[in-house]
Amino acid sequence: MKHRIVRLTWFTAVLGLVAPPLIAERNLTPSLESVPNVCTERPNEPDWMENIVLRDAYQRVLIQDIYRAQSLERIVKTGSCDCATRFPTWDTAEGTFRENYADANRSDMLQASDIYNRRANELRPRAQAICEATGNW
Image (cartoon, rainbow, N blue to C red; front, side, top):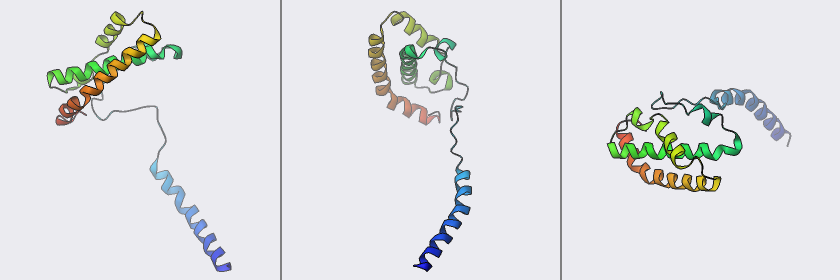
């Protein structure tokens, strides 16, 4: 019994000395800054979207969904996945939102978001294949 306690104490001491450097080396500290692996020069969202109040966040989500679906449609249609095609300016998505959904209620916007997500998910495999071929996925 005494031998087992000594061995356990020794193991705990060694683990205490070795474990902190192992943990520190992993550096898993989260960061708010995200640097993408491809197309690092992506256009920023319009300022009003980034500063939207929380209760209207569904509007921002809808525009993001429109942007994603339009981007994937463009990739599939052109067969190109250059950065300008994959990450265009937000003008077209913003225009689509203003033209079709600016006066819509929350429920209508959530339904539209679902439609754009479904469209994007259908296009994603084809767009991904095109982009992977050029190293842009």
